Image 1 (cartoon, rainbow, N blue to C red):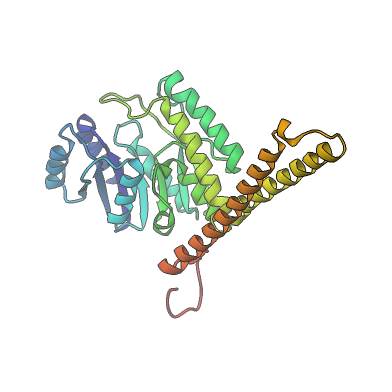
Image 2: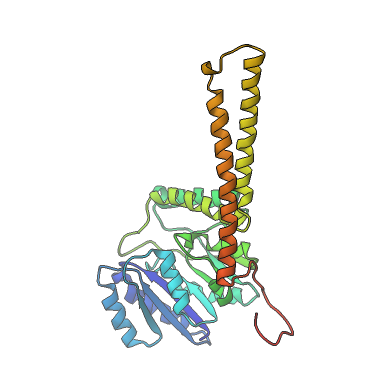
Length: 317
């Protein structure tokens, strides 16, 4: 299989038939074999029954039905796991992404990139609920991560299989695919793509997404910088606590010996003991985290690196 188009959906019944027709029109001119994989993430509006009919009418349409709603990230991972194409294209099932842009993504990918990301031109969403929070979120992510992608949230993407399979997709990390791809050394680029207003159904995202993005960004940065050496953050905090404990102890002695102040009248003894205890516990947590990291890599046989390509080896490693 040359191409797999992966579409996670939830309660998009009215959009499915038009989307399938648009995909057929967009992919028919391509000289390649393809499959369209719909991942039904716990729909309750009859989407799966319609997907069954669409799959019966066209063997290139395939359906993966999850037992319940696991979230977009899990649905995307399921699509990757069940796909067989060398190139994977992802898009939303709400007709806001335009399948006609897929050939443009593939053409750009053929220039040697590992992933080509869509950048929604003239985005057709609510200004205050979707567009402004998205602009703020994209700006924050660029500043914190150093990855200068303008539109992190566009789901219309094309990527090579080796990159897609290496992405750590869990929780709600689908929104950070460009970040992970860049940190893994992938060659990525953006191209403008069309964006249409939603005609049927309702959006699954609201303003609460802003807070989720901030919390997920903290997780992403922690795992990126300290996953292999967690002692650096736990130990650093522990040493800072020890320093504060030492300063508090020195000030306590000065007040007692030089000023004759009763220690009962100051909070310094409690502060000294508390910061020392916090520092000690932080160091222990860092050591425990170090052991867990080593168990993680050794138990799964997972390497702490990714190889782009190799030459003159008789087997794959």
